[in-house]
Each structure stands twice: as C-alpha cells, then as structure tokens.
Image (tube, helix red, strand yellow):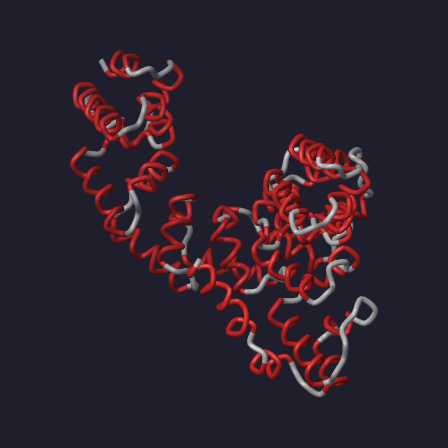
Length: 409
C-alpha cells in the first residue's frame, strides 16, 4: 500500500526504498504510514510547494512523515513568531526540512547563543534562513570556530560581517580556510589583502583555487597583466564573481563609447568598480559633463586620467565643475580632474579666503593652491579646514540661495 501511494506522488523506486526502510518510519503499519504520506504531501502542497519540491524535502528528511500536520503548522507559526517572514520560512523549510523537527525552545536557545556571540537578532534570522544548518552547531563549536578565524587574522567585527553575509562559513573547516588564504598569498596577494578580500567577498572562501587561477588566465587573454589583475581584484574582489563573458561585454561597451582597449584596461585597473556600473549610467555621465561646455574627446581623456569620477553623484560633480568655471578654471577640470575629489564647500572656502584675505588672484597658473593637502595649506596660510568651512559657508552663501531661487521660479 505504502509503495503504491509513494509511486502516485512521483517517487522513484530507489527513493521509495529509502523512505520505507528509514528507521523512524519502520514502526508504523502500512495503513498509518500511507495515511501520513497523503496528509503530509497535501499539507505541503497547500502551503505552496510543488510536488517536485515536496519530494526533495522528504528525501532530505524522511522522518517528516512521522509528524502530525497540526504540529507542523504549529512549528511553522512559531517560526513566524520568532521573527521569520513567510518567504524565509518557505525557503528555510525547503532547504532544511529538519528544522521542523526542532522544538521551538531549542530554536530560541540557538538564537540566544548566537546573540551572545555578538550577532543581532535580525541578522540571526537572515543567517539561519539562508543556512538553516546553523541550528545544528553547538555554542562550543561556534565559539571554537570564531577563535580559529581570529587566529587566522580576522577581527571579531570582520568575522561577524563575513558570517552574516555567508553563514555557511561556519561549515568550513578552519584548515580549509587557512589553505585558501595561503593559496591567495601564493597567487600574489599579501595576507592582509587576502583577509580584506574575503571580508569584502566572503563567497571567495568557497571558490576553488583552480577556478581563481583559471579566471586570472582568462582575464589575461583580454589584455591585462597578472599584476594588474592582482591590483584590480585586491580592491574589487567581486571581479572573481563575474563571468568572463560579462567582463568582455563591459569592455566592448566601453570601447563603443570611444575608449581604446588600452584606455579600458588603464581605467579599470585604477577603478575596477567600473565593471559594476551600468553602461547607460556611464554614457549619461559623459553626456552631462559634455553639456557643461566640454568636447567629448576631452571628457573621455579626463575620465581615463581619473576614472573614479564615474562613482561620483552627477549633481555634486556638476556643482563642483560649475563653481570652477565661475572662477575662471574651466580647463582645470580637463587638465587636473583629480582635483574634483575635493568638496565644492572646501574649494569655495579656500577661494574666498585666498582672494579676500590673502589678496591672491587665482588663475590657471596657480590654482593648485586651492587643492593642497590640509596640513600643507594650514602650515602655509595659518588656517585649518574647520575654520575655513565655518567662516565661508557654501551651504548658506550659495547652495541654499540657489535652491530658493529655483523654488521661486
């Protein structure tokens, strides 16, 4: 009877054999087990799972056929009371149906244990919904794992961060994590950089070293030198998560805007986050700068020299450029684009101070004095950044006035 019922629900002969011989189900008569199977399958299908999903869940945890549906519903409701959303419960039960075998008090204790280690409850809910097996680990194991990660060089804060994002790291042995860090060093990264990369992209700890080596080789075929790839991925390790086709496509898209292949390589080595930017946003930023009175080829060259500009808010960028144009430094934007790193508030304050107090006429030949580092500026002119910004407040004197004028219009 049981085999026929299981067959009706789509199980294979091999799966049926595994279920009927499962130790916790052997004590049931055929009639009772067949009844349980029908009830449990209907319960999960009513909950929203497909027949295929139910089969996968049962094969992960056949003992679920020994549960009563009213108790399963109670446990699901208790998960919601603990703070899980319906979507999280749905995903968690599918990935690890054994969670329905835990007593609610046991789950509460596990959550309390994780809180004692420094995790916030909201983070714990997210972590365990992604990686329900976290509930299987004892407090002693988790403490030991954290100590092991600290010995490898991670700080407590970094451990919290990487395990929040990738909780299955608790399932990796400390030896395997150490080997991954050692392998990254052999590829050319320092230990500090390897640690920072895996904090930024925790999933790297799950990448095989061969896959990383192969990705480096494939990127080399696009024109990059190995040392450039090491530099790029040191600051933006997410590149290892991109497919080689995605990287190729972004290079082609940048070339279609007018950059040469050498330009693209130079820009992305200096600012590898460009690979994460949408090409339409890049195009729009170029056009916005051109609209301020610059030639397109000049703007392209400016961004080759200072590709980080693509990460700037366009409104703030335009505000900086327009102010520089207003004081006769339009060409400085093209010649020394890195000066756009400085806030317009500070540039304005320094300009007012130098022209009004020091009597200096700022021109294209001496504009660099506006952009000296803070210590040099204070040493030469006797005033620091804080004093300047308080005395010459761009927000009050310019920005807010412009906003009010726009509202009047």
